[in-house]
Length: 241
Image (tube, rainbow, N blue to C red; front, side, top):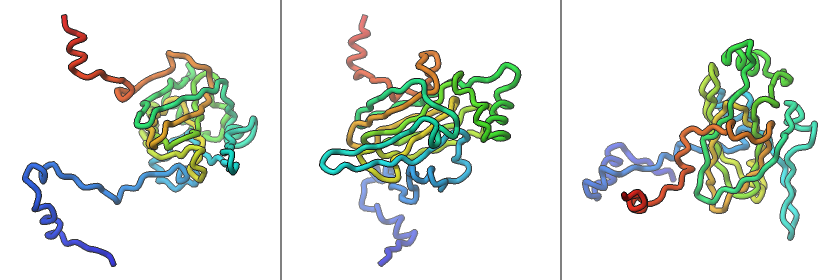
């Protein structure tokens, strides 16, 4: 049986609360559904959420009963990385404790001297999007990553000059939860990215970069969440003259 509530009844629903509680009250909007990684693989998202150069591809996880699991990511010259002509020069791992977040991170795009950023991105991602040989992987950092444990919520924003500021926010499941949300993600330079550990377990990430680590290329935007602040009374006592 479907339960319908009239507008007048909804207005009276909270009449038993104090004025202070009623003023502070908010209810959850269940019409807003989070995007799952599998929806990006199948293209089940509106065009305004599709960021040029960002790729999301499914990974197969093989269950090994009584032992664990095994998951593939990429083979040289094969799959999506083979198609776009990118192979990481450096691999690394990162662990995020449950309940923590990282971001936004961003890497500087390489712009050839004989053109503007706007014209370059138009050529690279609009006029010749499948001419992968144009992409300067060796001069700018592209990231490709996947997750081994827990659940990651990823935020991507296109901040490249002259490109539509498209945004996408979605959930990726680690290999310990085999299924269609086990994916790899490729992030171009100039696309800001943030990650939140959305599971109860620590989040383990494996990622490759098209260039080796250079501190100057590690930009940060709105990254206050990464700063561990001491209690105010500690700070006050510490800074006391």
